[in-house]
Image 1 (cartoon, one colour):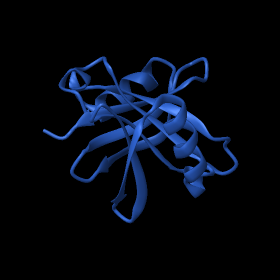
Image 2: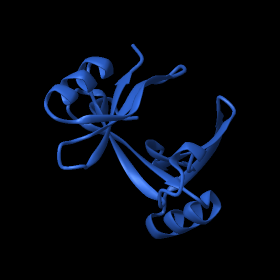
Image 3: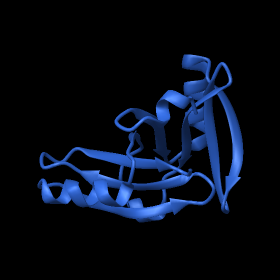
Length: 127
């Protein structure tokens, strides 16, 4: 991840939750020339998307708890404190869709919904 993406308020990551990781990797790899790097993230297969060696996003299998949600891209915005930002969003009329949780060795995230229903992920990097 680029250092400037770690600044609070910046979009820092884009992630595809999909029902067919192999097809998604082929499609986007050919469409944009993205490089793909597969890894195991705590027992979960994950593909990091790269442009010229820079990590820009990821692709993963849609988790079971997402139910029948269609495949979709989600965006992450860097915040100083995920828990505080999520609490503030709630006081402003938003809602928490996925409670704050740690990504071991990486950071902490949650998913919120704004008062109009748009979802966005909040992310703080490990120090």
